[in-house]
Image: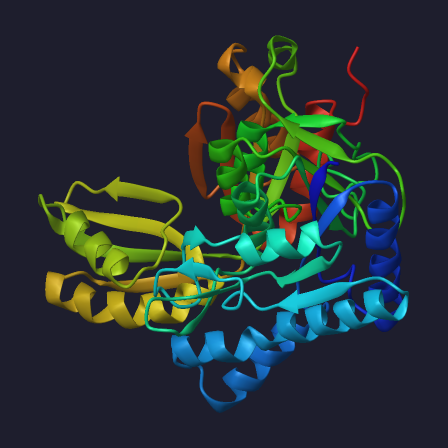
Length: 407
């Protein structure tokens, strides 16, 4: 009997009706012969509601208390889901992350999983009980509730699947698979039957909201078979697979975008060895992730150092960088949160020349100015003004003919 971890996102459990639909789907899978474990997110909008309550009190709430607060959303959803399964005649038992337990480090709001003890889950499965596990949650060595960062329920599901040696991890969401770009933004977007771990990892890290980045990394490392599919239909989803030879025939497979970034510029920093190291060490010590970095050296012996962080981290970054900039003799610090990152992803970039030229020419034809550029072996990203995001996505999707079925 296959062992399947079924993960349901916030929209899939966004109402009592949808929770009952998830319960029916889980029981149908069990009746068909699967052994089932469920991992659930909070009901859609609940995490944002809880964050909003905290920020009404203070702009910088304590991270430990935020984890204690926002983890309650998943607890509520899992309790309701277990009740719904029981009401339909099935057997279910809900578990918080600490009850499993899912053990993590103590980096509140972005904890990393260190171990999962699956024995309780496996005992339930053997007895015909469907364990319903809270995504997003864990427990540290001191007994504190921790959370895994936004989208962390995907990571919980893949990690649980690895721990119980599941045959498959199905990620159920409000879309029926991985698309060439956001279909809400680009009507010609096409669902992919499969995408490689590497491409999915790039797309997820660049703003594609289908899967959380760390969950893809975990799936790749532990070779967990993952399928992305809709909780509202029985249509086949998208399989995330190892690379095959025929996949390099496509120049690009995805256009991703991210409006959740902000740009920070430290102006006229002395152009001396060690200056950049001091700036980025201070940011790193605060556990703030930096994405793109650009340095512009001037003839007067100074440099403008520009980098991006998430909008959620902008305020903390300012409190760190502004006093440090004064200490270093910089002219000042400028920030801009009205930006977006747009990226083209594809394994074919390894073997096709001229991809960057096509991308920049396409954007130039639409008078879209490029503020920053970053590349990897299979990805080119640009930062642009946020107001041009939709135009840029559609332009690049058309330029690389991603709406057409491959031959």
